[in-house]
Length: 616
Image (tube, rainbow, N blue to C red; front, side):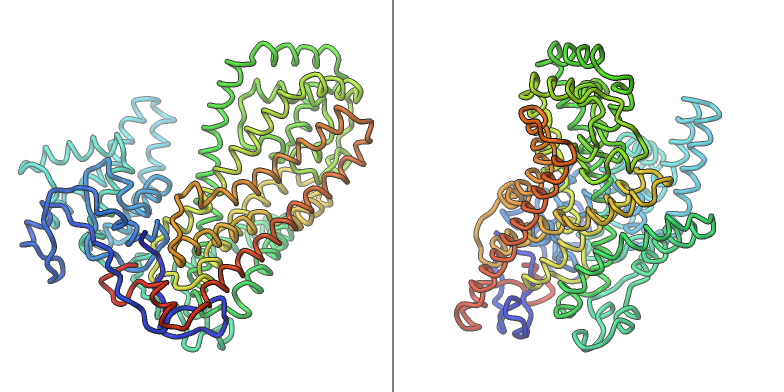
C-alpha cells in the first residue's frame, strides 16, 4: 500500500503528531508514461530517464503513491500514465474535478502550458455559456446545437495547440483534428479535460491553483515560525485563490444581503460560521497551526462547501430515483393502497400541507428529491405530523406558522399498519443513501485534492478531513435554515442552534481520519469501503433513528408528540456523544501506537518520501 504522507524532519511537540527524524526511501515502483509522449521526448522527462512502453496500468500502488489513495500529496510524480479518454480514474484528482468543475480544470491545464491564462479562459467560457443559454431560449434545439458548437470550438482550438506541444495522438490534418476534438468535447467534455490534465502532470508541470493559475509551493503559503506568529501573518501568506474564496463568501453572504436590507440573512450567515470557526480554533489553530497551512484549510473547507455538496445532491438524486423505482416495482400495490387510505381518512390538511410537514419543507425526511409517488405515500401516511419528528426534529409546526390539520389517531393507525414498509423506506433513504453518499463525497474532497504539500502527520490528516466536513455541514445548515422561511427568524435561529449541537459531519470526518491513520501510517490494509464503514454507520444511524424512533412511538404507544420530540433530541444527543467518545479514544489509541519505539523504529514503520522525485 502506498502512502500519502511525507514524514517531517523533526519530532513535533505534540505526541500525537510524532513523525520520524530520519525518513526512509520509499521503494514503491513508479508508473510509466504513455509511449507516444515518451518517444517524442527521446525517453526523457525533465532530464530524467523514463520507461517508454505502451500505456498500461501502473504497478500496484503506483498511482496511489501519487495521490496517496487520492489525498493531495504535493507536486506531481515523476511520471503519470496519460492513457486514453476513458482512463479518468488513472488520476483521481483530475478525473473527479473534471466531472464536477470541468472549466476550472481546463483553465488550469491551458494556463500551465502557457496556452491561455486561467482567468481569461474562464471569462471566455462564461461568456460562451451565457450565449448558449440565450440561443437555446431564443431558438430551441437549434440554438442549443449552435451554442454547444460555439462553446466547445474554443476548447477544440486550444486542444489543437496543445497537440503540437506534447504530440497528442492524431492525424496530420488540422481540420480533421479540430472536427474530432469538437465532437469529442460535445460527447464527453469531462473525459477530454481529464486527459489533458493528466498530460500536464506527466510533463511534471508545477502545482497551480484553480481560477488564478498561481504557482505556489508550501513555503509560499506558510509563514516563518508558523506555530508562534499571529493570524495576520498567516492571512498575509494566503494564496490569491483563498483570498478570492473569502471575498466571495463575504460579498454574497454579507454585503449583498445588507445592500438588499435582508439583515436577518446577514445575521444567519455570520452565526452559521461560529461553529466551524470554533472547531477549527481548538483542533487546528491553538496547537497545530504548523501542521498544515491556513491556506490549505480554507481551500478544503471550500471544497466541502461547494464540490462535496453538489456531488452529494447529484448522487443522492440518482439513487433516490433508482430505489424509488425498485420500491414501486416491489411494493407498488401496498403503497397505492396506503395512500388511498390516508387520503380518504385524513383531515382537511392531511394532503399537500401534511406532506410538506412530514417530508419537511427544509429537507427533512428523505432529503433531496425522492420520487413524487414515494413522497406522496409518506406524506399521506404521515398526515402532517410534526416535521421535527421526521428529519430535522428541531422546528415544530408552531414555529413554521402552520397548523396541525390532521387526524393524529389516523396517523398512528396507518403507521402501525404499514410499519415495516415505512422503516424499510426510512432505512434506504436515510441510512444507506445519505450515509454512503455524503461520507464518500466528503472523503473525496480531500482524497481528490491536489495540494502543494503532502499531509505529513496524523494531525494534519484529521485537520484536512474535518475542514472539508465543516464546509459541507455549513452549506447544509444554510440550506436547512433558509428553507424554514424568512418570515420565521426565531425558527431559523433555533434550528441553527440545535443543529450545531449535533456535529455528526465533523465527528464522522474524524473517524475517517482514524481509519486513514491505520492505513497510511500503520500499514494496515484497508479498502475504501472498510475505511468509510465506521463513519457511514454513525452517520446513517443518526439519520435513520430520527425517523425510526418517532414512527415506532407513534405506532405502538400513546406518547404525546411533544414528548416524542424530546425523546428524539435525547437520542440524537446520545448518538453524537457516543460517536465523539469513540473518535477521541480511537484517535489517541492510534497516536500512542505511533509513539511506541524510538525515532528510528518509527521511521521504519512510517516510512516514505525523502526527495521531490518519490511520492510516498
